[in-house]
Length: 196
Image (cartoon, rainbow, N blue to C red; front, side, top):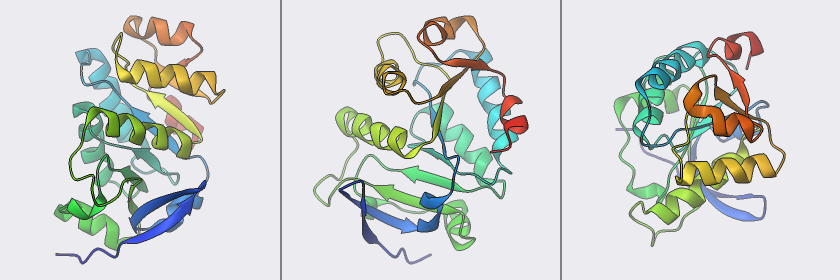
């Protein structure tokens, strides 16, 4: 098993625990990825296509990779050569690395980070929301696959749009509210043409 080297860095005045390819933080065009736990099948298919398209990108995808769709996207991303930043919603030292994570870390294309200290051993809804705010702040642009009405993902989308950051979502009737709020509707292949 890979021995994790854990460091703390200052990121925007905040102490962050990191392990892995710290240089990924300096890469441009980081794309934040979010999706509510509940998601329609047709949007799930678009998320899979998105992950397939960007897994060879040179710019990092950054996410908590916690919701089922985010986890599925991570599985696809790990099968490609592209860089990945995973933000945990708990302390970093409780992480057990899968073989895929270990391999990606050895290849210098995976960074784990956590804004939390040793006392925060378990994921809670509040820690996950705080983590998602960190993901949004690290990202240059954000893709929200789907934000279920009344969800914390919808609240985060409002915050990110209100801050003036570019937010994408997939063209779909279920994303009408996000689009009306200012999210740019796209199809998965948009990210191939965008050359992240």
